[in-house]
Length: 179
Image (cartoon, rainbow, N blue to C red):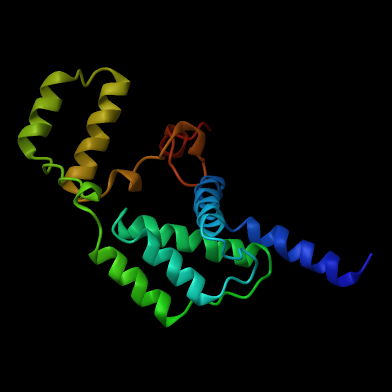
């Protein structure tokens, strides 16, 4: 087997590990959207994709969805290039198109801001839970820590149970080691 092919496969395998599985799943949607777009107007979808095609894709999507959705599609195409060892040709024009896409986002892509959590809401939570129950005590401790620490919930909790890792989130064993 050609050494170049073996080394390219090794680099590709390692590079693909740089993205979380959920990120790659999301990126696949962006690549599929791009491929469908190219097919619909008979543009070549071969790698590397020239900047002008990337700009046409971004401009085509501008005004139909949020600028961040378009930027994520472009990020997915960048990752697609990296994972296939193709040079990325996105540059200044694409950067300007992405900025313009953010300005042209439709009103439907804007979500009203959530009302801020207040200390009165925490009082209601405290009144609704029984601190002698371990789960309730944990919920209250987390809610108080996030609120008074002015933190994001994601800084305290994993996004799902499957994402829980002993390397990142403390457990009772950390505070009460068995000896």
